[in-house]
Length: 181
Ligand SMILES: [Zn+2]
Image (cartoon, rainbow, N blue to C red; front, side):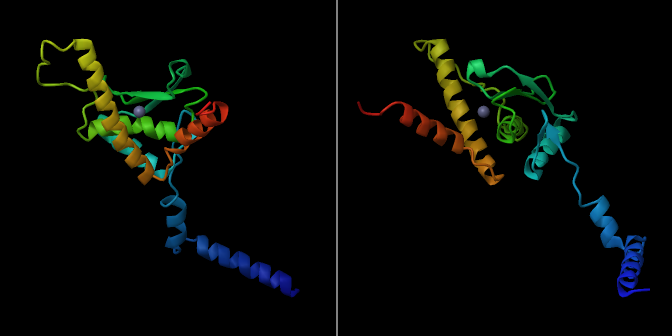
């Protein structure tokens, strides 16, 4: 028996020994520390996004649903809806099928479960001289801005760079059209 064979047999014996029930660190690494891969609309999610999914599902007692839709015509990459008690996000088939968009839409629902109203309701009457449609529109702008500021902070904390797309768009616009003629 040459040395290589002895080493191989010893390695196999050691492997059997480690895989046995008296090797808790191995069984732990195989059964407990490997997280299940979570996907929404076919996009794999990082653990920090999975935490958000878990919190939403815990709150609604329903699995988060994701649906591909045609939203790009409206200039949207996605939107979220949990008004019927089922947490659901819609993402554009082409532009929205990415982790950042999915995390963004999930955070809209997540803010709702943390006390941020999913629809802006006002408990005071608007002054009569102010047009109702304009009043509502102004309210939506302020509400959306507040909500997105919170979402951007959370996205950055989760390791995303939510500004990259806007920066890229700005650079593209500046390249295609001179700012000063
Ligand atoms: Zn949004």
